[in-house]
Length: 329
Image 1 (spheres, rainbow, N blue to C red):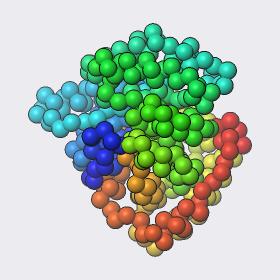
Image 2 (cartoon, rainbow, N blue to C red):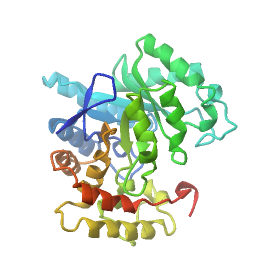
Image 3 (cartoon, rainbow, N blue to C red):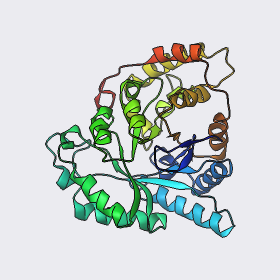
């Protein structure tokens, strides 16, 4: 496993991190035994970065991570594992509307209470990284929540501060990076969604902001394992994400990528991860991992050769401006 600097923050993180949404629930049935085995296998293979959130099973994901780290410490496995978690805005419109007020959706009392809960669930007195779980451009002129988080940072409750970008307006966080409000940013970046390469990633690199890439597989379709007939259980997030004709359209475009990599020996998943890691601003990519096979396949990708420049240029042509995918066609 190769490591990369996490921005300017003196920590080298594994190129492949552990995306812990699915082990908390929301992606169909998931046994805790499988989740624990997956976490242990990834960590044994050199992964040292885990990303979770309050909303991943209402703390279930965080509690499983705490259990695994506690058991590993008891067994003498003391290598540092960096755990990033997220606090959502208080109940209301998601994503926040331009008319929402930052000091209401992320009030000081709410942030302090929620962060105390994150610490309790993760079994720690200090969070490695606390990310706000979405944002809106409307709050950039009044970043009150980050003032509160800087206070909590000085108090020793959190080490680093970040934000997970809103799906519809990832560039809304660029001003936050330039203003020095955040230490890290979590973005959507993949074959289809390449907008961060236009400016966001370069700004992050210029300001020493750590970059965590999510949705590298576009919720699985870029692994090449779906067909237009694939169906998801009703309790699986993907049943709504790929509603209507979205899945068939995405599969068709994914198959075009498969043709471009057909002579490389790479799997679709390997190519997807290597494409993300080709940008030097990226600190880590966090594919969802829910079993040991996925842990092994994803972690092994780090040691594969980088994509050749001509292939990388060819793959950039798969940029897909889908517009309001989350809101409809």
